[in-house]
View 1 (cartoon, rainbow, N blue to C red):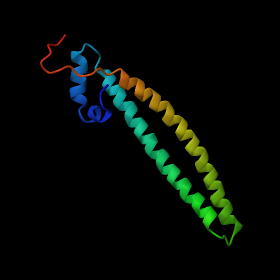
View 2 (view 1 turned 135 degrees about the horizontal axis):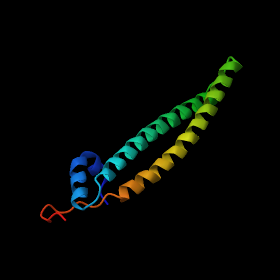
View 3 (view 1 turned 135 degrees about the vertical axis):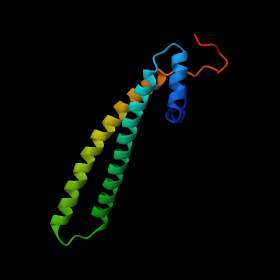
Length: 116
């Protein structure tokens, strides 16, 4: 199995190697598309969790003058919790698809091996 970073950094070389192995080079593009989606969801998930943690610390660490402020933060935290749940599910689904796509990419042949 090829390293994900190698595929990201050398997509043309991987496409060529895949083609030389008699496979459709489209598998590389499919993997890269899924990888990009997965990375975006992962980033959004990390940012949402960080915001959720920040709000949770704010709720527990403050004394509130107005009950409205506390209630607003609690509602925002609940909304973030739901968003994290949705993003986690999406991330897991993309991770499985991404790994399946990665397994479709063959190892690259040595340069001195004849094509075919």
